[in-house]
Image 1 (cartoon, one colour):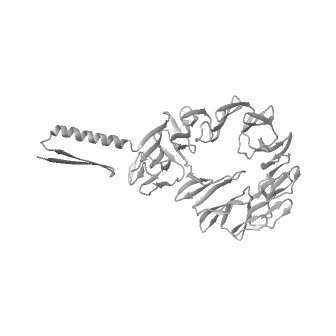
Image 2 (cartoon, one colour):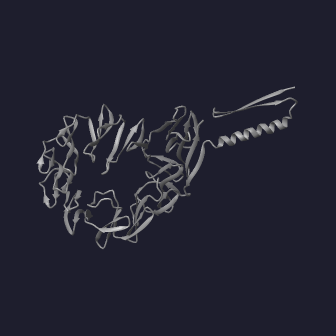
Image 3 (cartoon, rainbow, N blue to C red):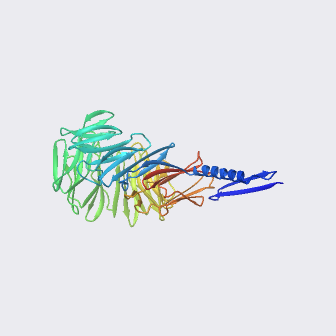
Length: 479
């Protein structure tokens, strides 16, 4: 006598486990039950590994993630992350970098005594972070894991609105015995610096032992390698603006922007007079425009700017006028002399870099070009923000925090994340509105994704998440 048993177990409509037990004689049902149970346990054990859930950091009981500071990524199969957490009892913040507690103190926006400031970090490299902090009225810096300090002041690039120096490629500046020094690769060099300081209710500019002021406000400080200096100041925001170009004071304007000076005595700036906008290039005044912005002047003297006429925007490229655009932003001169800028046409935003034009996006922001020609910008597509760094595209940064109980708080509308496998057979979707992600039409996990990737080598969806006090990575292996 033959008895045939077929048992099928379904998991999320993906996994079908079947077996047929053939028994020529009457089978012991007790043994059969044990066998079936073992099969189920084996199946459950196998499924439990998909997704693979890994806790990369756990917050303390009284800690929450500080708004706008969270950043989590996975790279080269190593869980690397950085975040700022706040202790609601101690009233202090702590910078966490790749699982280590680096510094605890009064990080902004706490602005108090013993101030700490996080300037930059890159989780892809060990110890790649920069923090300055105040202790006993002295300033210190933790520069990529090396602490230096006991200074009167410290400044860290990129250059700030309140100071500028002619030196390039320095790690940080510090003030000692009322003199400024540039630190680079363990070596220190005395430097000249022009800086603006707020004293009481007025601003002053200091350069090489000389002081200028008082002013209601200052901006656009300039300093060349040969020691030429300049700055813009105003005594009435609406009508009393001046340029100090190496000691020569301009006439009074209604407004001034984009002031630039070069080594060969070339200079340029935008000014407003009688409600009209003009450009002054080495003393030569342009025609008037409705608006002017993004003035650039290269080392060779090439000058570019954007102007608006009759509701349309144009680029003046050293005298050559471009086609009309609905809008233009972030105009830059590349080292080659070509241009980089973003523009809008027919309700789409585009990027033009060296004549190569991107496809249209919903929005563009923060187009930046370095002195060596590297470039990056952020773009919005299908409701999501991305970063294009020299052609390498990654997820944009999401602005989130947690409350003291670990509940997620989203700032603004972060949109959604939607990706697919290489062969398009598998889909991944996440929205901040839902406390799970969706893979191939099924809910996974207990929270939305913060960031996500498709790993082609592993044929795996990978994403990061926050669940209560745990920072996590998930890996979901595909068939």
